[in-house]
Length: 57
View 1 (tube, rainbow, N blue to C red):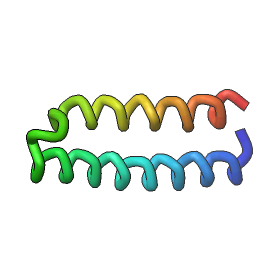
View 2: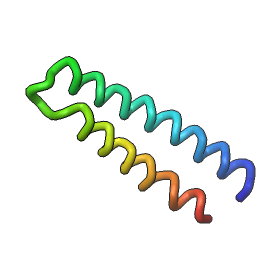
View 3: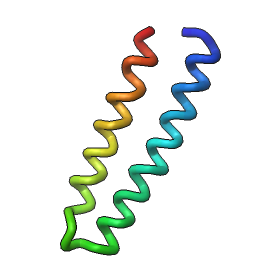
C-alpha cells in the first residue's frame, strides 16, 4: 500500500470516528431516538465499509 493511500485511510478513519462520536453523543442526549450502542455499532460498520476497500488495494 502506498503512503498516500495509507494517509487517506488514516484520515478517513479519524473523520469517521468523529462522526460516530457525534452520533453517539446525540443518541446519549436524546435516548428516545435510538440506543447509543446501536449508533456506535452502525458507525463501526461504516468505518469498516470505507477503510477495507482502500486497504485492500
